Length: 147
Image (tube, rainbow, N blue to C red; front, side, top):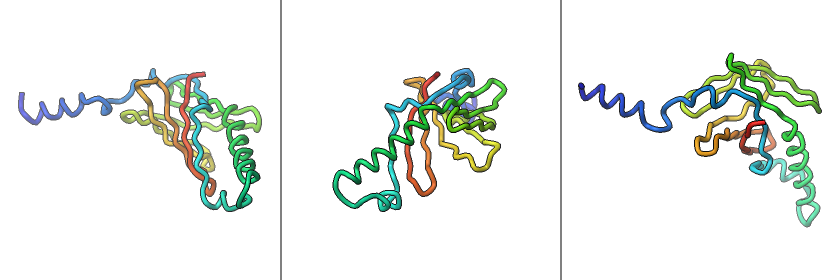
């Protein structure tokens, strides 16, 4: 076998470079709120009282409201490569398409206002790590688990 072909095969067979099979992704998922991490931007922190427990209480209440909303989200990856993000209250039903590149689950939503997290499939746990950014609010991450 020619050296170039051998190098190509070795590179392609390395773990992490192969696409995760779609069958690992297809199904309904929810956020595991135990893994939710939120990092609020300085502009949000500036809106809260500057000292004392009131500031921590307000930040905790804000975190709690985000957790409550995320707890009702269902993300469904269909075999036809369509995706839907649904929630009962407040009402949400956003659709798009998805595909896999390596361990990254790429999504494009049909509503331009929809914030789309970065999604990475985690082999060891069979979960999907979602990393998101809320404009002017901050960043966060949480793992998706099967519903």
